[in-house]
Length: 179
Ligand SMILES: [Zn+2]
Ligand SMILES: [Zn+2]
Image 1: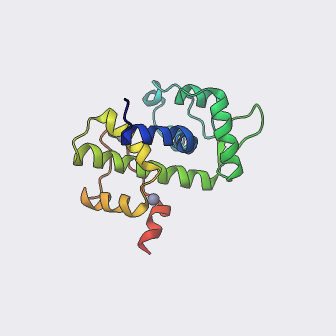
Image 2: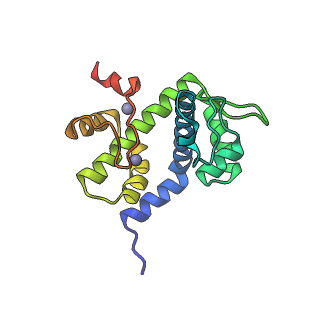
Image 3: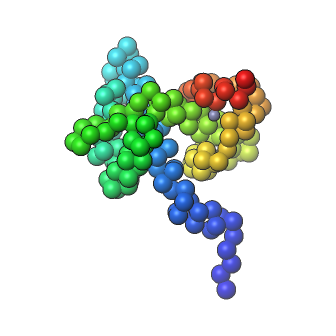
């Protein structure tokens, strides 16, 4: 007789309730990252970004480019985009690239900060390998609040980069808990 453990329960919960939220977060992170990198690339040599799949433009990404980058069906991307539009985090009109709003970039930036500090915790603190730390940090990102992220930040002496070597951005949204 098959017994369900916590892993199965979490996966079921993710499948039903949280997968949509996770998709929205991944999409926002991708667009925010792309926006920031595109702004930087105008000051830096273009070659640095040659290996990227998606074009670096501050004008956003098409739903097809997003689907390719996140390895998601375009219908899933369309659902996530529609929800983010409703929340005022992205703008999109048919056939045009999906663009982040200022609120969307602030939210994407905070999510990146949470994701990367959770990676620091799982990888440097618990010794998990990079791939597992990456995957698990995305799930935890949906539930770990700013107070947990702040505690990790302090515990690891305000790290500048995640275990993969990417910058950990500062976030005014996270800083609100300190006031
Ligand atoms: Zn990382
Ligand atoms: Zn936060």
